Image 1 (cartoon, helix red, strand yellow):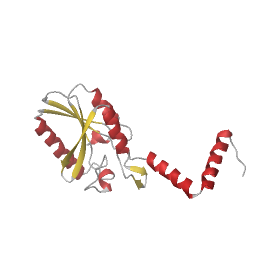
Image 2 (tube, rainbow, N blue to C red; image 1 turned 30 degrees about the horizontal axis):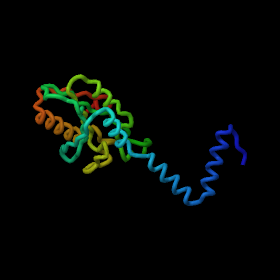
Image 3 (cartoon, helix red, strand yellow; image 1 turned 90 degrees about the horizontal axis):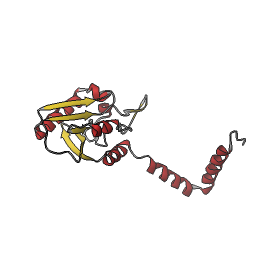
Length: 180
């Protein structure tokens, strides 16, 4: 076989040949390593939230469970609450293949929440963050702005406002979160 390219390609090919010669044990080991590196986006999102000092919670709203994050240092109750809604994330892997986990890979909304001087809360969207009980893939693809999703978010926002005795609720969203 003729190899075009520099020494990097030769090393890559040599590694691939070595793995093939190692047989099934090498292949199983390689697959195990690759699978370990491919954790779902919601795990990375939660690690990012933890690194920012945010505390995770879960809220039941209709047929859905929603993830919440708040600053751990949040002080006394306030009459105003900024509630952040995330973008669409990644509902599709390809134009015709639905993602198993639509959670955004980039936690931009967590940066916004962390920088906000007001009391603030992140409200996850239905079927995101690994909470897919009661979900149908349509809930994060073609019906992501549909009645089921909007109703669940409305129930969650009303519950949060009542529990925190909030009089002024400010909803902040971008992309799909802005639509919702």
